Image (tube, rainbow, N blue to C red; front, side, top):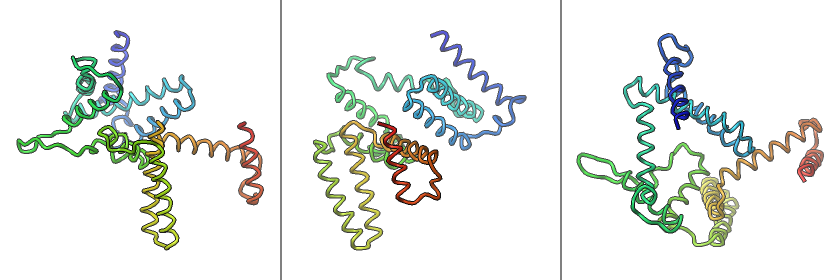
Length: 262
């Protein structure tokens, strides 16, 4: 524990020096807004390291994410908003508050009960003071709007399922997928572009929840499929000039790339 504390303090001190009067010009120029892109990039690099099971890379990428947190904390301190200690204090308090079955005297018997209590506690936390009146925020207000749309669809299902608003089985979701597919095809046949877009969105939303019912994150599944396609296409490019190949040649190259994976 002392080693962790020492290393955390050292990182904060490094950032203090970088942002100081005689520090690094680039670091001194950064703002909350300019760091957003770096935080997103570093987060995705963490995910990529996990997918590849490259744990040495994961160690480094987690450090890069931590750097962005310390960076923003330093900027916040300069603006008199909050400090790194405030960040740690708040998350510590939150974790203790949301685990009364560990740090308090509540008893739970399943993961489902843990998640149900979690949502109840979060609901209380969402309450805000407005002119002296306690006004609850919407149940889904905690889902970041900046998430990819497929991930938002997944999170909507995760949250609403915790209060019982959900399909009972994956088979029921599959039935809904067929229904949405039929409605999408009707819109396509009618040449209704707006309707087609709406029905396609409904289909994607339902597919995201089909994945959830099977314990699969659809964003993760799609990311892996994207990577698989890119790897196969890369092998095609190594074997031939894809820009001058015929459709039949491209299909043959694709099948050859797939065969290498078996």
